[in-house]
Image (cartoon, rainbow, N blue to C red; front, top):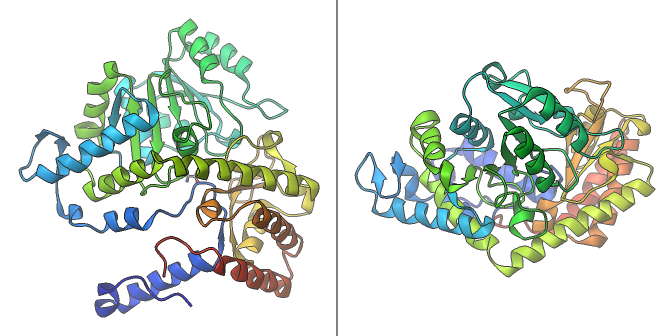
Length: 417
Ligand code: DSN
């Protein structure tokens, strides 16, 4: 039974202490398969609760609007230098509060309202901030959305055709539910031909790129955004990397254009996470993430699941569960009851709706951080299948939950006692 890892909160706020304890227990006893989640190191966790949370520091290192910046400048400069080293970036802004603000600030650094952007459709693996009609930015820019091919790969020919037809100011790649490698050089060639700028949102795969295991768009593209909390295993936050020529515009777009004071406690945690990602062990971690995803691909295929995009080259799988007589919503709920956390997800050309789609998305970064390897993935695939098939059988779901809990005891979550 985990004990709460905090000292001061239980002494002054029982309701919040109980919620923290509950969440620590949930994270320790269950399997986290949400592809965008991870467990940070104890050092990253500690950084988030430091006195840097007390400080306002609008501006950038060496050029701030408020006094008292000796140490904020140290941590922010270290975060920038380490990120440059990790990705080979000419310029880095570590202030975006998260991925969506990073994307919006990036758009405003390079676009004018009314400009045309070519980005991937959400149901084909894109992201809300890549122009989905429900977002405010879709009212400001004209988004044209490309889709994957029937076989499920990025349709570069369609990107080329749409680029020639619409002459976008920006071509956008990088996805939140796409499991294959991206040919950035091919996209850059298309963009050069039509005079478009290039942007990649590498939020999901940043850790795998930093580990040198997937193609890196940073040296090639004009602007690259990411979150820092997914495969990169840092704190919840965002970051923008760009060519030196766009440095001023990017910095001005983040602050004062879009955000106010940066969160220096989070930036401290980013600096620590980047130092961790520069270590050789991080490359091994990345390799294991990908090996684990490959095992799940093989096992789930053998169990009769249809894998979108034909499988995986990264950390995630998008799975059509309709062949198992379940919807994504039903599968998510059944797996939750079995102690396995996933998210329902639209699949390409999904006949269903976002709140009750045909698929689920799963990923291996968090399980890999706990030290789980190939043998555990074989068990995980079997539990996924059993839980989906037993979606209305509470006893069977409870039995799986006990088995999951037993396995998890051998793989502690960093930072949880
Ligand atoms: N919510 C994130 C994800 O799960 O991919 C993206 O914003």
